[in-house]
Length: 282
Image 1 (cartoon, rainbow, N blue to C red):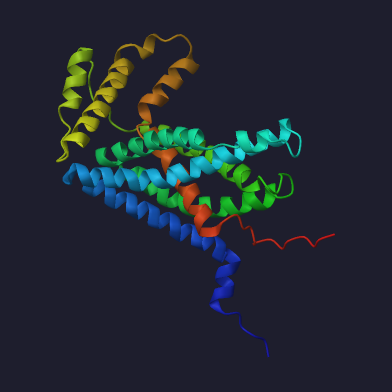
Image 2 (image 1 turned 90 degrees about the vertical axis):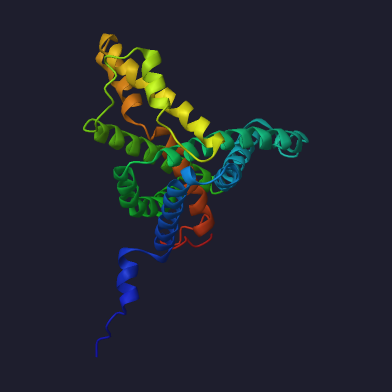
């Protein structure tokens, strides 16, 4: 008698448990960010600071680990084994403070983007991207295992995936932005455009209100420049790059979001690529 495969076996043929954990984790991350975005404009400064800290901590841990691994790779190339400079240069409090500053800026950019409101189309793209990320995470790791150093494989695979994913998402959002309406600032001066957009920002937290006004003022500058100066830029390539900066409002949102995805993926599945049998030892 032939045995029928249980449903879990059929599911595993499509998506492994490794990839399923990644998908569920990324969907949970999107849900948390959506909730934060809906609440930020209605909470006080203490809650805003707590939200910033919630974003800052995983970014700090990830960036510090990345920097330590990159420093270790550099030391392996330039120093002899047993050199006392390994301990002196491997990175300590100064490296931690530097990465804390970078993580703070990225967390603040993500917080402002959430408070201003991420377009629904962007959330749809991110949800559709969840299975792509999960399968690419395991697939790229398995492929690079045959080429990259085993010690630095997690760093190499993750950084490659973040860079490629960021480029693809930004290009897609820039293309989508061609059909999105832009504010008409053609009849305004630069000062009027900045005041017009900055004055429309509201938040219960004074700290967040100032941040939103500043971000809106920067939006006013780039949109005003786009409608007054960009047509006069020499060369189509320069004009295209300038319009990409204008159209992709989410470019300061996508990068920290992908870093959070990387941090969550490391926690959810570690550096394990078990979808492919390990080669037998020699």
